[in-house]
Amino acid sequence: MLVPLLGLAIGLILLIFSFSVYKGVSAVRRYAFLSKFENNVLFIWGNISISLAAMLGIAGYWNVFQGDDLRLGRIVLLIVGATATAWSILETLDVNHPLKKFAVGAKIKKIGVLNIIGYILSGAAVLTLISIFGIAFFDYNYGGDAFMYHIPFAARIWGIIPPEQYTFEYFTENRFLGFPLLANWLQGLFWVVFNRIEATNLVSYFSLIVLIIYLVKVPKIPFYLASLSLLAVPMVHMHAARSYIDLPGNVGVSICILTLYLLYIDRIKLNLKTISILFLSAFVAANIKLQLIPVVFLLILCSLPLFVINYWRTDKTRQDNLLKLAQVFAFGTLASLIIFYNPVKNIVLYQNPAYPVKISIAGQVLNHTEESPNFMHEKIRRLPPPARWGQSLLEINAFDDRRPWRWTLAMDFISWNEERFGMGGYFGGYVIFNTILFAFLCWKNWQKSTKVALALMLVMSVVTMWMPQSYELRYYMYWMIVFVSLNAYLVTRFADHNPNPRNILKPQYFGLVAFIFMIIFIHKTNKFFTYPAFQPLTQQLETADWMVKKEIFSQIKDGDRVCIVEKAPFSFFYNSYFHPGREYSVRAEFNLEDERMKDKCEGLKILR
Picture 1 (spheres, helix red, strand yellow):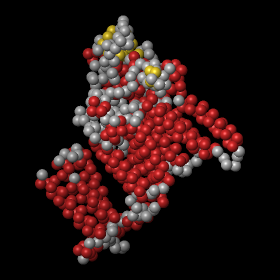
Picture 2: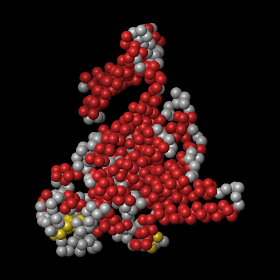
Picture 3: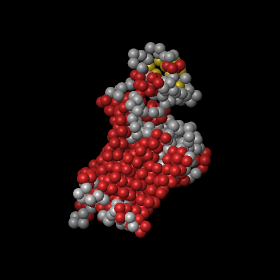
């Protein structure tokens, strides 16, 4: 205990001394050498880093951080601090001193401290994205929806694993018939192109890259801020390298919302380019995720005033304007039919736009095979949807020690009907920071861009909180993506119009805060979602008995027709595709107690 306390004391003393020197306190000015460091940025930042390196020893004693991570962090802080302090000393040397040539103060002033911060953050963003790509391309997925139906759907669509080789569960088969399948089609494409199942992860990864490119090219947000502000959101960071489809669908909705926002504040014009962006983003969202179809419909309604304003010309007659609008809306109707291809198809084939999910219209229950999602703990059920959603946003009572990491893809690893299932995922502290930042931006810069942004956030929040299962934040990630993107845009524009060095609203500072939140996330998840393990699925299947149980697999003989029961989400991996040299067929079922399923395995070897 003595050494950590001594480090804390030394760090505090050095910190107070450094600020006294930097501010030019009268007691310090008496010493000519120390007075040279007054207002020296390198000196103060260098000594702050050294102070933190000394003080953080107490954090290790109290087990706030893991030992190896803390040790590495302290070493980095010490090296950075010592380097900056040494450079600050070089700045005080006489111009003829032989060491003066190593001074960097003039170069830093020429480049600009903020630009240097931007370069460092850009490097951090690039390295993080490269590292996440390593996971997406080389590492296996893990559990949940990806194994239960996303990857099996991709295999069925592309004929990689035909139904004769593996037959879905009753409910899964009907989901395949009714759910939007664009993301699964793309997953299968990557699987075929690269001849590796791990490549299905690339759909989510490239959706993040598309979003970052959009933020850089359209609203002109700096690359480092566009990247780090998103990677600081646990749900975005985790889903970026996995075969879940929540991120690609929500990227589509986010791009659509942000484009409408930029149109409403007259930042961009309604032309072929923006119409194409609106169409493609809406099409992608509506054809990837069932829950996002109502949101896309509302966005199309929100776009209508823009088309009326754009195509109603005061220099033309009312009849000409009405004719032009009729043509525009005819094309819009055709575009909407393409966007909503899946619900239209479901109406024609199954008389239910949301098939196979149960919905009712005017009291009439439509054709379905499964109930609407409604699993939740009784305490959560008693709360009104806005309260559930708010509790999940702030991550109140969201974490559970049974999870392997603080955050998981679906905030799962516990039973569906437990209180903490599905709760959280946006990093409550980061949500609070963005809320404070947004409020400050509105107060500091009350003009059209912030007024429309405030209206957008209010409407978007009201809509989202009342969506089904809204407290499961992964389904509606667009809310947080749009929120941080709006803040990034408003901060960037404010800094452009207010270049005063004393202005604290700068993209570099926002980027630093986002970087800190991202580092905390990486630490709390033990780097699992950031650094590749280079462990393919084949290796995982060989070592993880909980995926394909040996006592069950040993009962399967070549030529068998077997029914694997109650092994979801790993039933898929019992099929012969993953066991080269073997030939047999597999049918999967969740259970055989349901009336609709009990006869599905008749004549098959049943294995549980």
